[in-house]
Length: 388
Image (cartoon, rainbow, N blue to C red; front, side, top):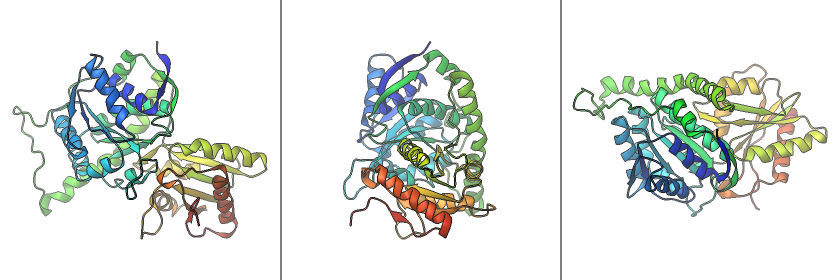
């Protein structure tokens, strides 16, 4: 039997890692991630988790240690935020290309400058081409469940997985979380040695030079793997549902029955968007909300199905692409829908940078602009909540 406890999103991640029976944790503190690895250090110190806990001198070292440990067949975990994720940049590409099934929690925080410890999505979006599977959560319960799923997804896809949770809004908020029996989790993700690719008893070449004659094909193996992971993500979510009674899917559509316009969001703002959509529905507006849980691999078919019959969608980015055409999530949506018959108009928004509150009036403004796009076509990207 499981139990229901009140814990933060960060602690929910730590409990999931503990139940996953990891072999090695590489830890370096950074706000607002630190309490994840602090809680894990407590589990290791008091004997609740039999794992090697490696204190390193930087996030670059943390991810490097994870790559090395993973190559030996260990189940590994690390966590970071913002500048820490940016410092990992070069090794993130190696982790995916070397097919290491690392699980990392990224507690989303704005990138400097100016120095800011609050939440937006600029850190993860800056790493969107690194070849990692990226999952987004909206609550402490989802943080626990998704982290458990992430270990199975990583190991069956042979790719690293990044679990993103909004800094402070999810990471530090205490919520009721249903923790399953630890033995049931271990049955779902049994702890077994993975392939040791640096053993002296087997012949593997790791980290070799890839000249033009071989680089393209070697790189394509990781590209092909992340495409194939779509099937694994679905299968594992169905298996999780059958065992624990919870399922999340790649995309969640809310209030879309008969809707003419919808906002597309990621992360914790889904709840606020739903509340405003409910209010607008009561006023006779035909609006809904679509939330993406999976960002890499991008859920193209699931998104297209969710927007069928919609006249316009408003895409809410919490990161920007300076000097580009469109912003990260907007560009993904536009590309996914570009050849769709009766494609909805796509209106772009930027909101909530650096932890700026996205208020009900902001959501109402975005819904109004999206409805206008349904009638007149989309306009330029709107920076919502930006002071004059």
